[in-house]
Length: 291
Picture 1 (tube, one colour):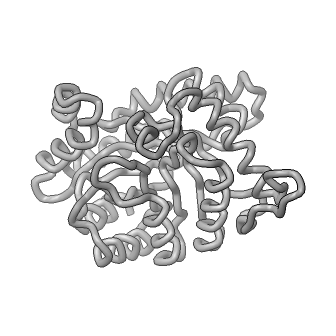
Picture 2: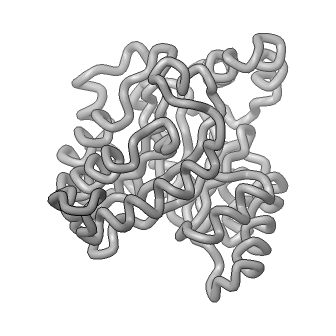
């Protein structure tokens, strides 16, 4: 099982020097990929700029938007941005896409939250045509650049429920599922949904399986993880956020190793861990555990 890590893009004490250090540590360590999520409201560094920097600062790890909230964007713009990222990385992009759950982010960028699942299906189809050199409008020039990867980056669907899994089975190369507390039983359930959806769609191979969870290996890990999760989920209601934050347990070496080992048994292809703080010890201590 490959191990990836997400950049701590929500942290205020995360600037140029820290980003450079994290990219160097990820590229030198045992990690397979470096990812970053996309949020608009709240204090977050912008995903596409972060990953463009990571693409240039690294040589080995794959670069993964996780997730590109595709229905918020123009498919043509997204295709151009992602192809450019593939060029900057030398063909190392794995594209994670999803519909997101923050309606306010759609609102502030002037996008509609309605029909977002259909918009994502349509956008994926449009992007793949653009990457093949098909003009987005008849009589116009094709949208460049062409990705380094001949068919474009592999596309991973960030989906959870059976309906979303069934839609993804029509076009995705794999799935990305998330258990906030790193529970193997939750991930196993979602992998099962995906396998059944792929079989029902007549796919000959199972999806590439990516899972993830939140963790902290920093000093004061329990507090940092609790505060991070509460902040992350506050948009869904403070009471719910506090309640979920209290259930977080992956804040010491033993708990993280336990989750990794349990998830590996599920034939997970890649596990992406998301740190709760920006201290370099988060990635250095994780590297020592999973090398």
